[in-house]
Length: 267
Image 1 (tube, rainbow, N blue to C red):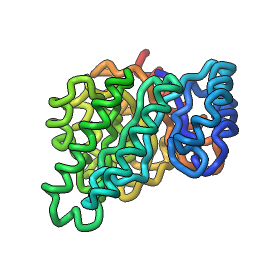
Image 2: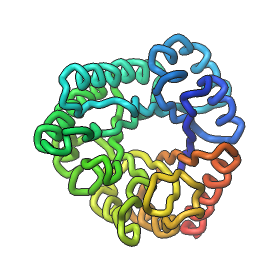
Image 3: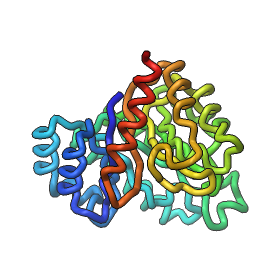
Image 4: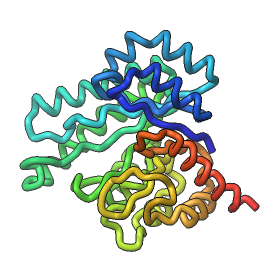
């Protein structure tokens, strides 16, 4: 398994990269959000970032912009959001990103009252992004969300889009899948249904109600059972620790806990 960690995009990207490298991670998952990691800022720092990645023998995975509205009911907002993602894709390709993580369109505002229309916009935007990514040689890993997003949080929500795009992969976010899931079973339904389509992992723990991003073992998620399920489907690729703590030693500790579970299952 390759392990990565995310930059906090309110902090300078190059310093974030150095801090994550110092913790011994294999790659940076570059969250391409303002103010510090907008695609325009990344492009200005391209040489420095590539040099640092090379000096630390690290790879990069790009997380496309999070706080955009590609399913918005207002055409101009939706189109501007889509353009932000397309521009970010170009920069991800320039960075040589291994893969790109994409959030599906969030259904908010009045979209909740016209779900069919909002979902049509979300899927239309997804199709444009996936097509452009394929042109750039990038593998898209679509992330499962949580119930408040109203879409793309249940395994059934992914059936049609994964059938439509055979090269599309799933980013399985353990924290998202645990929210509002009785007994944490949604995680295992994702693995059982889409084990061969998982292309990336986001690892964090929570108590089942909110996206807490707490250390592995601090919440209610059964990571030993997750490891067993992942082993069964043969997953052995990239896993980003999404532990949002001011003490970044928690990132390393969570990575080591998860890795020990993997090695225990190997014996």
